[in-house]
Structures are given as structure tokens and as C-alpha cells.
Length: 50
Image (tube, rainbow, N blue to C red):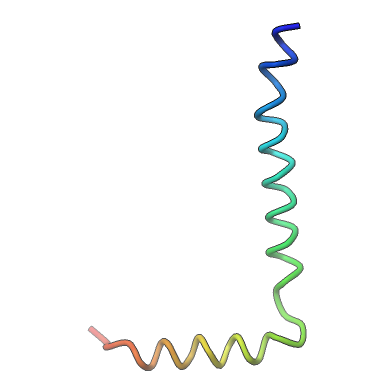
């Protein structure tokens, strides 16, 4: 039964990572895209160019 305790943590992390990637992909675009792009542009123009 040691193999079960050895495989559970990586399996849980893999499932969690898959849900994280899915959430990031699903949050791209949509109604908030224009507002997020405008905020990113404002931050980019405010920072000093080097």
C-alpha cells in the first residue's frame, strides 16, 4: 500500500494544476477583456521606459 501514499500527492497536484490552467484559459476574453486590456495599457504607459 506504499505505492498509494506515494502516488496521491502528485496526482492531487496534477489535478489541481489542470483546474488552474482551465480557469486561466476560461478567464481569457469575455466581457472583462476590454477593461483588463485598458488597465494593462495604462500600467505600461505609466512605467518608465528604459
